[in-house]
Length: 107
Image (cartoon, rainbow, N blue to C red):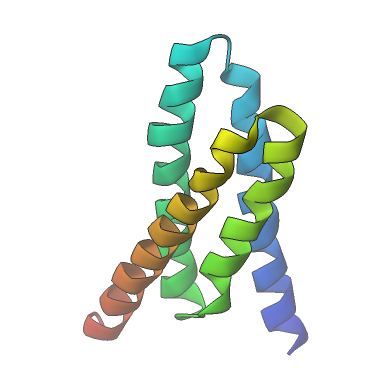
């Protein structure tokens, strides 16, 4: 059980880190949109894909990914960024689904 918690914790820290690190690259509205719509969904998709291949499909991981976005809305953005929480949760769910299928069919 401790090994699972360590693996799960590592993925969670990566997700949280990628929510705050790209903020350093935002300089104007164009770069903000590219980070929010292109870069973060790709990162979340890949993390979720790897997570599902490594640990398996967990229904709570996309919820965690969505909830972790909420503090950044209050700290760095305005209330219009709440919708990205749902978007990132759905992207995580898709990434986990595809990762789970890869894991299942590659056995």
